[in-house]
Length: 353
Image (cartoon, rainbow, N blue to C red; front, top):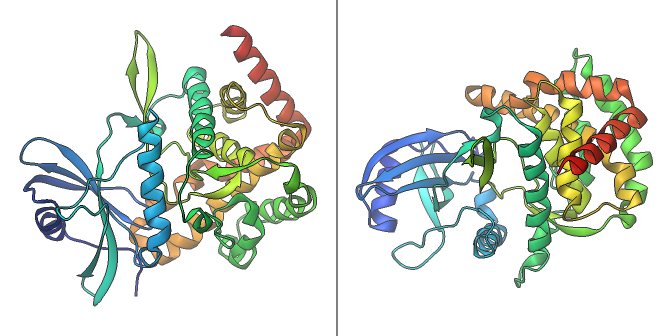
């Protein structure tokens, strides 16, 4: 039985009416990895996103409540995160028994604010946008460090495969890359990561990370004559305990995906990040391998999940379109060359500001 929900428009309309007391005038699906998202326009003209969590994650109510709390916490501090709308009974989320055609399963439902803007993936990424992305990611993590909640322990997520420290957990899935030349690079990255990154985790500064600060989860809108500003941060499903440098590596990697000059992406993102949180020596030394590690996670898990959800293959394989080529190029250039370009790019961008 699939864990991904497959609600119909009539399901969504019924939930909006029963849980929130509103009538819908328009519903259409939005992309999602494991969950299901819908754009919902109600009769008074307001827009929302209905997010239905997959049946597996819906079992972890403590973690989902904490994610919802974090979104509200950031919003209160001026960071453009979505927030949940309370139900008629005052709940921020509702666990629902729903039959999507293969028997009843429990799905966690939330109605979230609809934020303005378009994803970074759809806009040619200028150095200014990249700088803002790095700065916003760092600002968000710095704010999350101040968040208090009785269940912060739920963010430990020891075996969460998307946490960068868990790169070696990819090994049982590497068979999905059989026949692909990038498989050998993935294996070498994992082995190098074990030797050069894992022993040094104690030198990295701890924090709570969003964990998926990607070009599909960050919204921008026009601001000023020729500029953009970040208008939204989506999808806190990968939130976990981690390290500042993990968030930076994730941000750099995803900002590379659609870039015509991916190696140059790191400089402005790094400059934006360090305008808020300068890296220490150990963090800076690990950044290259952490970026490569995130490429490996996204490529392998995208390929694996596409075998489970063939109908969602295009979205699941987003990284694969350019990611294999980017990973191979980064690996061929080597750590010293890539780091030099990132550091020079960051310095040049900072000098221009």
